[in-house]
Length: 95
Image (cartoon, rainbow, N blue to C red):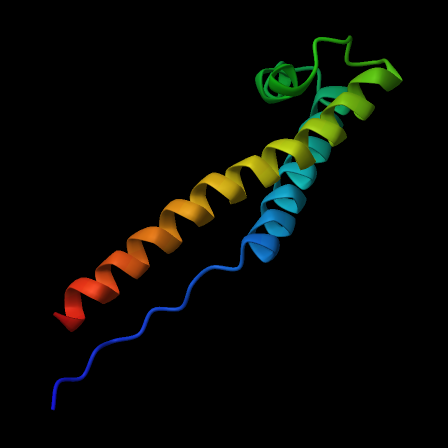
């Protein structure tokens, strides 16, 4: 009898929420670093999400919204590709 290792499929919604939360936390940490540390360490990450000045409220709104949007986009693309590879691999292992 042949045993096939079963790999679970990723939950797109779980991945979307976790990627969005990760990007939001990274954005907030980078904003705090940009506001309280005079070095320009975090400006590149902030610049990905907004072109507003770092001391404006618009940068926070843009950054938080785009962090969630990009988190879901990453989850949709990554999750779909991962799930299709896992499904194809499972079919290949069966035959």
